[in-house]
Length: 197
Image (tube, rainbow, N blue to C red; front, side, top):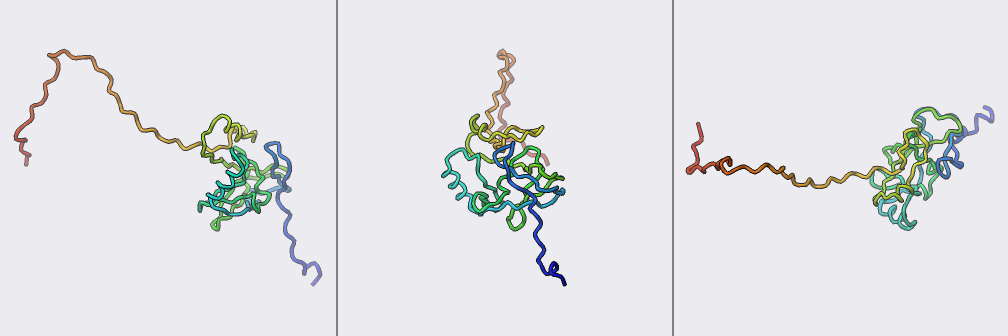
């Protein structure tokens, strides 16, 4: 045996790095070519309850257009800003090259949707849920700058439409009938007619 065979295999180099992005702040870029379907990076952070996430967001002051929260199927949230990693800097895109998938154990991994070339910025679609009114100021705060051909212009998820109760239908006015044309009322039958059979 040689010394080289005794050494543990070194981990492959990371598939991505963080640097300044033309989309927004920091971004994550491929350090090498990435294959379609390849698991790129875990979205790491501390798992907290939704109530704790809201308390943390409230402590930052409003609008919360820069958080690292990732919702889980169990109702909790991964806070990538608390013990997180580089994945928290992946920017949103309306035409992403990656997707986030929650595994059965509740971990989140970022996978390549198609081939990604070295130095290409990684992105995935994460429509943000904002409970408050989507005012013009809020829409500006959550503006999307992905530059995609089909960009929606916002990172906000559409608010679910709340159905208003249907207004009572008003029967259109009919022309007045002269007294001689008013249909007569059916006379009540007493006793009621016998049922056939």
